[in-house]
Amino acid sequence: TFPVFWVISTSFKTQNEIESSNVTLLPQNFTWGNYDHILFGMTKEIRGMGEVNLFWRWAGNSLTVAGITTIIGVLLAASCAYALSRFKFRGRRGILIAFLITQMFPGAILIIPLYNMFKEWSLLDSFQGLIIAYSTIALPFSVWMLKGFFDAIPYDLEEAAIVDGCTPIGAYWRIALPLTLPGLAVVSFYNFMTAWNEFMFALTFMTGEANKTLPVGLRSFIFQYNADWHYLAAGSVLVTIPVMIGFFYAQKYLVSGLT
Image (cartoon, rainbow, N blue to C red; front, side):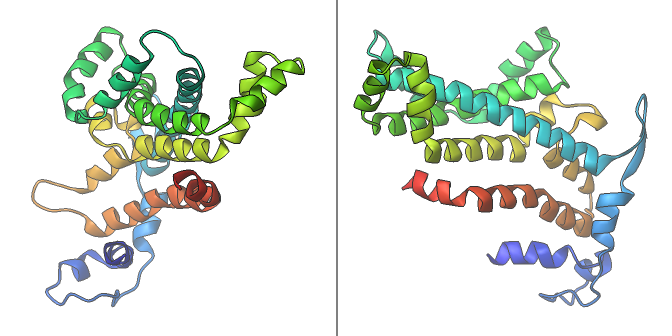
């Protein structure tokens, strides 16, 4: 918790106090100016868009990408995990092993092939390319997680629904899916976190100033020989707020899902 406390304390300090040799835990000259600059002072003239507040633009980009990635990731992972859990078919074990193997490789080795692929498809500097990349990264973990939840649900419940006139798809949608709500909460939170905090792909694929996400945008406070630590700390605190809100809202599902 101390690093979190230090970042929060730094966000209320001035740059001179941060660079001073007299380091203190609490700010000596408490100021809200750093947050005021981040929220209202970061305006820039962008061609075709007029004057734009960069922080709110980056926040909107991150929220759009993370939200769509979460929806797509959960829908694909839930349907795939259900099929792997309920149906026996040739290649099922191979698919599960393939999902597991892909988790062993670092994301850095995917940058060049994804970059070339997105260049061919004209998806560079677009939200669509970033969403595809993030959904692909989060899918293996999500499938494995949800498969465990579907395995724990007795198939007798779905058979009873089918006997009562429900279709197989209806049994999945009305019976199996609601019973995996804790697992869906874990997977949703994981997908959102993956897209919200990711830096490497966003830095590589998003080149336009107006299309940056928040992690890449905060990098603009770091220079070659120095950094605006007061602005960087304030921006870091603001970036964590949506994740904290989501965590506190879904924590009961996360706890039951992880246990």
